[in-house]
Amino acid sequence: MAVKVEEVKARLRGSMAPVVTPFKTDHDVDYEKLSELIEFQLENGSHAISVTGTSGEPSSLTVEEREKVMETAVKTVNGRVPVAPGTGSTNHAETMRLTKSAEELGADAALVIVPYYNKPNQEALYKHFKTVADSVEIPIIIYNIPGRTAQNLHVSTLARLNEACPNIVGVKESNKDFEHVNRVLLNCGRDFLLFSGIELLCYPMLAIGGAGSISATANVLPAKVAELHDAWFEGDVEKAQRLHYELMPLNDVLFKDTNPAPVKAALGMMGKIEPELRLPMDVPSQTLQEEIRKTLQEYGIGLQHV
Image 1 (cartoon, rainbow, N blue to C red):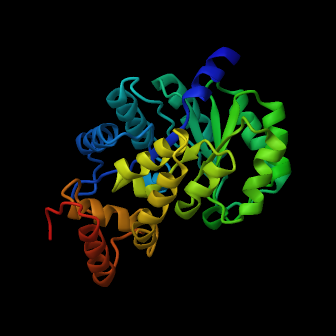
Image 2 (tube, rainbow, N blue to C red):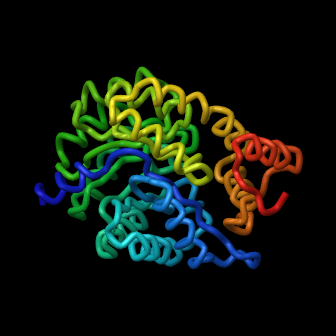
């Protein structure tokens, strides 16, 4: 197991695109469009693919739909880059099932979110993640997003998990507390994979030794997001910094409503998908949609639905 984990860990770097789940106008999942979105990512240099994370609206999908989305992603990628689907849930048994399914379907790793709504204490979180990690051999990346889960995974708990579970190899920190993310690498080791889930911290996390980012903006402008990472890893700090600031206006507008509503609106304008979400989520207001459209035009992004 250790060899396989280390091999995958070595490949999990750069821009891991968290691909949205496209729906048809009748709100069925559009698996054909999903494959097209993944190809769009690969053609534009994304270094890894994730599905059914926050951008993929997992809480709006059935377990069976999540499994089919994962299967579609693995088959479409076909080994070209690592695939690390989101398999977490507020339900422990569901998380176990989805994580095992990801392994059986051929995913390279699993992204497992801190359970939302329940607000488990740190010892409960430790038991939850350890049980999940012990049930599979693929690498696990924990997903800490306190703004949406109402609970922060403490660095001390993460360090315990890293020590106890050889296949817990990293964390996606959607955490605005930059002191916290610094302490992740201090306490878990500099080889622990730290991914940014906060768009404006993607570059700063690379600067402290991060492995990359899982940024919703990559859905819209994958080449630029990947290029930022390539520049950093090639030692071109000036270019990476320039791209960081170039991306900031787009990052800002895509988070003026709850993700992935603005991203789906943008992809709809680009002709990539139907801009559909399942209730209780919905598209942004017309005012915000106009702002998104204007921003995309400023970036020179071709629009099919002006």
